[in-house]
Amino acid sequence: MFIFTKYLSYRIKHMDNRKEKNESDAAGSDYMHGLAIDAVIFGFHDHQLKVLLMQYKRSNIYALPGGFIHKEENLEDAAHRVVSERTGLTDIYLEQFHVFGDAHRADPAPLRSIMMANGFEPGENHWLLQRFVSIGYYALVDFTKVTPMPDRIFDGCNWYGLNDIPPLMQDHETIVKKALESLRTNLDNKLVAFNLMPEEFTMNDLQALYETILDKKLLRPAFQRKILSLNILQRIAKKWTGGAHKAPYLYKFIR
Amino acid sequence: MFIFTKYLSYRIKHMDNRKEKNESDAAGSDYMHGLAIDAVIFGFHDHQLKVLLMQYKRSNIYALPGGFIHKEENLEDAAHRVVSERTGLTDIYLEQFHVFGDAHRADPAPLRSIMMANGFEPGENHWLLQRFVSIGYYALVDFTKVTPMPDRIFDGCNWYGLNDIPPLMQDHETIVKKALESLRTNLDNKLVAFNLMPEEFTMNDLQALYETILDKKLLRPAFQRKILSLNILQRIAKKWTGGAHKAPYLYKFIR
Image 1 (tube, rainbow over the protein chains, first blue to last red):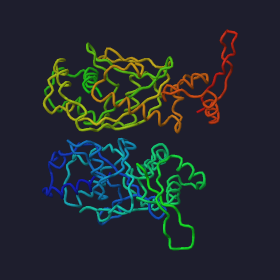
Image 2 (cartoon, helix red, strand yellow; image 1 turned 90 degrees about the vertical axis):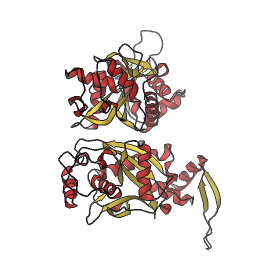
Image 3 (cartoon, rainbow over the protein chains, first blue to last red; image 1 turned 30 degrees about the vertical axis):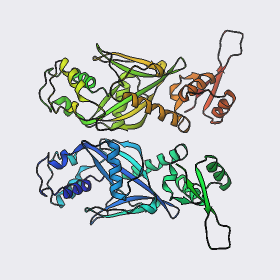
Image 4 (cartoon, chains in turn purple, blue; image 1 turned 180 degrees about the vertical axis):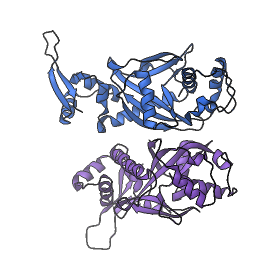
């Protein structure tokens, strides 16, 4: 979790005094201390699995979208809020997948430097410089419906192909890797993949998605047989391609 | 998590003054606040899946074993410590399965009453009466190797069959249910069940375990074929039964 930027967003939103010397300021006291959320937001586009990353202003620091938990907020609600704020979506498929709790997973020194460079003077025991345990969620979203939304702190909020991810802050690369493992495990037993598809899709689209997530080629007849046997797809109509070739069927997921 | 008893254990262990009026006492400051661990420890015995439960002294209050995370302790180490303290085991199969983070999952009022009945006078903002997010772990242990260990606070630390679980504190019944769901999901893709078996076992023992976890009967030939095809079992010798009947083979898990 990119602690400082979350914090900055909060400060600006609440128009706090920009000079801060008090350890127990209001910004800190509204959140549970020591606990954060990091979100791996997966989308599927151009036959590629992509994740949404934040880029910190005037730097090459990249981080997963993340946030904190308000003292009176349910954990799940906080996770939905975090993903909603970055994607503009409200109906989000979200899965809690792992808690990252190594005592020294995040070095506070760079955070302190960034804070000071931005006019903050955090005390030695500032809550943002303490240890954070981070709860990892992955979200599966329809790429075509997302409007990536940076905030006032981040220059960028953009999609990156899984193979083109820039170096990430702290243990965020581990978090992405673990999210992908969990997604693979849940592919069959929870049928999560449909959350990554647009409303209507062809069998080819779906197979491409499975192949991308699993990172291996699948045999078309076997794949099609397996998926159709689940009775979760509704065949809609032939896709009009305007060409002379046989048009593929369009399918829709029956929830 | 049965917050108060964890806390009492801690207090007694560290010989603190039993009268406490200070909010930020040393007992609290050694742990991360707002974060706890609850452990669902599964064992298999008499063809039954069992869980280890704590019973609070002079009461019918039952709770899952649990604990807190020291400020300098890795989350995984804390979970191992908690399970180790209650089972006497050191080599433990442990799986993080879910975080329980509803804002009002635990009512502080009964905790306060118990604390006061035991001579503590917790202030309004005492850390133990604040909100706790709990990280759920399940452990799979060899029933025959466990010595359930109560501490000075708990009268009891005993095994209970999944169908004979007494009413549990707070949301602990939900935690057990969720742990079981997760165990079922991981049965095939992680082959976790072997952690519940003794060193040597028969195919019948193993099938009984799978049937218990899945709560359904399995066909013996299909089960045996499936398990043997995984190439994870070593056949040892025939079990000596002393009788005239055909003795079953004994197997061992190859890690």
